[in-house]
Image (cartoon, rainbow, N blue to C red; front, side, top):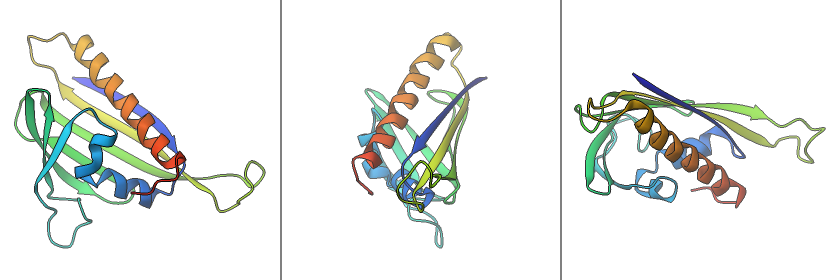
Amino acid sequence: MITIAVTQKISAPVEQVCQVLLAHRQLDRFFNAKIKVIKIEDDGELIGGKGTVRQISIGKIVFEEEIINASNKHICYRIKGNWPVSNHQGDIYLTPQFVSPATSFDSDSKTTQLDYVIKFNSPKWLPEFLLKFFVGRDIINAMKKLAEHFVAGNSL
């Protein structure tokens, strides 16, 4: 099983980071993929949350992901089926981090620590180290873009 773990500090409260991550139609700002929502969230859930199914297109590779659980502190999703990888699950943990008044002019400043963990099995024909490298690189780059999005003063 391949495990990829990425940590990123983001200059925004957890609620704002969560909203951006659940705005599926706009995730192509960060990820190198086209994303289409094919089923909206279940009744009573966060917008874009539990029950949402999104179609991911990366070049000619097309698959579906389903949001299993979503709150302001944790988003969990999985790939439906066993292609292009099997037993895939992604967990994004959002933890509030308060900036010390000694290091900031605004004692109410908040940042978020984002911990992104993905686990999956590689197809037998593809070397695990290669898949881990490319997926890991894409996730690291996406999380840097997400952090830059908030530094630029954007919210959604």
